[in-house]
Image (tube, each protein chain N blue to C red):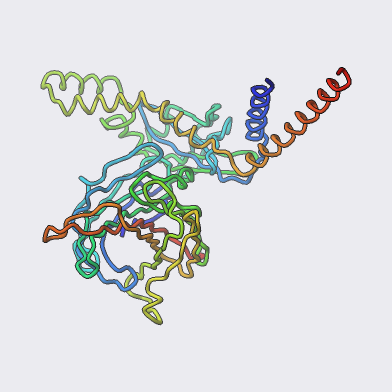
Length: 208
Length: 230
């Protein structure tokens, strides 16, 4: 009768232990790529956790002058339009992320990468003009390969969140700490249950 | 052997070169490797077929294969080769050594402890990158997805350019046995590529060149690199 409630309590306890893990000295990493006129990126710690609300700086890789600063979102992601100065002067961008406790990660995105991303048909995204040109030629020549490439590309884009969900699911593994916590919780709950049952028994025995 | 140019990719390295060969790694004796039956890369739930990308090459003066694989995002990448069965007349068996190696790119360190689901494999229990010479290495031997109790694991160092020599033939291939859960541990005394090979008999047969049904040796091979301190 009480079992479902105990299971729920146990689940909460295990979930809670995920959040209650103390901050550890994990290495901070950043990954960035160029898409349709924008630069995208993700910040994450070794161990797989996302780096949320962390400042991101885009610097000129040579002079280390900060050209732009933004923040990662709740999923550790960020995006920005390449700074005009960078585009005009074809600057290589050093993208850095930092947390208050001295963790730092950096990624070099060369001017070639973000300037050519627009003209690369296999890139994550393209400017609308180019995309429609490819589609048009594909329809005109009924080039199966081109159609296949577009479908694959669109599918890939649609699947990104799905893949990410799957990837996140994989990461949420119970560590030894969680298992021990879970066992401790079971023992505790069993104790409480035993206590209640003994009380109940006493009660029935006094009643009877 | 499946040996990558590097097992840890820094952000400025945008690709990895892989050499596929067939040899006695310590003695540096090469054999011809016919085109593998399969060669692919696994990253998370994504599998990429690399067989069409293989180009002919030479390793230890024998036929081998090579390819350059672009690495675009952070991840732990597992490379898997399933060779074409090799008929070994001296041992009267066909040999299929499923060979695996893992690389880590751009700071990601997730998923190295997952089996890729091949016929037989060694699943690392020690993270297979970022280890030092002298570290021990643990792995679990799986055959058909199940642990192999007491599996015998042969261990050999890839003695590149034949710089080292062994005091005796026993030292060329070292041997460790797995426990009842198929788990083994071995300490690697030198920096370099270390190969672990768990050999098991298959539950099927393959025809020898004369058409007789003969046994098959299934090998689960894992290559991992141990670094010296800088």
